[in-house]
Image (cartoon, rainbow, N blue to C red):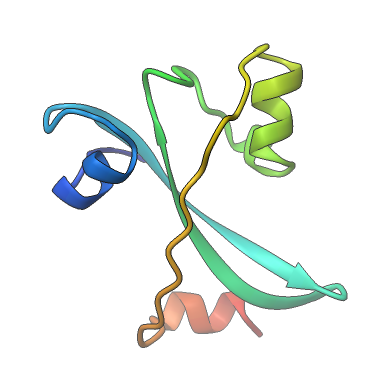
Length: 92
């Protein structure tokens, strides 16, 4: 979904307060089993048309191979929070 970047996200991604990002969640697997839920943000100005099938693979590979955009840095923040019922179902 498209959302306005929070102040923290805008700072992390070098965006202005009025920029928008794609916010997405992906279920990550370990040895074929649900392991964690990743939440990510991609600036719309970097990838104007983010489609779900792109998120099925490596976003970095897509940017480099299909868009000829070099990924020079990324930011990772690991947080732990109580899971929602939807998250619990996805992790079964």
